[in-house]
Image (cartoon, rainbow, N blue to C red):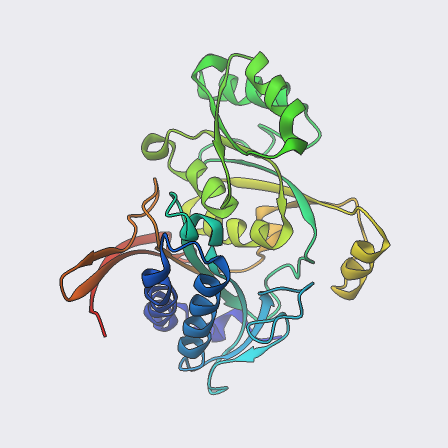
Amino acid sequence: MTSPVDFQDRMLSLGLARVSEAAALASASLIGRGDEKAADQAAVNAMREQLNMLDIAGVVVIGEGERDEAPMLFIGEEVGTGNGPGVDIALDPLEGTTLTAKDMPNALTVIALGPRGSMLHAPDVYMDKLAIGPGFAPDTVSLDMSPKDRVEALAKAKGCAAEDITVCVLERPRHEDMIEEIRGTGASIRLITDGDVAGVMHCAEPEITGIDMYMGQGGAPEGVLAASALKCMGGQIFGRLLFRNDDERGRAAKAGITDLDRIYTRDDMVTQDVVFAATGVTDGSILNGIKREVGYFTTETILMRSKTGSVRRMSYRSPIA
């Protein structure tokens, strides 16, 4: 395993921002065009090309299409020049392909990078997730609480009423009972159609986003990406893998996971320092989307390092080829 000392996070951070920007720019011409696959493929191609320019010996641990046997940026693929530190890479070249195709809010390109062996190799299964922002005691909320108890516990910790709490939830039939229980407390819910990495990130900046808590079932790989973001921004996330059949349990075994009931904290999912970058594709509450003007595109990227707690927002103007 590469020592954390060898992880040149400061030197690599700007390069990671370029990777995220390139993926977003590649999908720009497909925003609102109704073609999810084309938008995703454009982002994948650009992200892979830029990653292979970085002086790293990278391995993709959270990547494209475990079930679909994706031809690139798949789990286990080696990327980079090979002349640099060994690193784990978690990525989603286009988080919100449907959002992009329909020009709906909060589509992002997302990538995180940490020392080799620092990220949970989450299989492509569901994860039950719960997240809150920074500044709370570790035992404020837990996955073992009911949705009602979580809302009331967070309200008590914030010194406010349950009616003042807003919870972000993926709009899915599986969440109908949970939504009813949350609303029964008086709390409000912001439903999102896709993009739960952004959903979790909302919790880290409640004064900007208006979101206090995230809960519900979504993709486990996205859980690791969200944990990477909160490692930098502050906040807590808890995740428990969910298995519906033997095939999914087999994927867990292949990833080296033996305790199928374990609840993972943020620092279990990302054990060492991490660099995280995301670029807005469509407008959202975290980042501005790509702006097209005569002759050029403008993007906004958030670039963060957990080691220093630094959060940079960068605007990049690129001529249209």
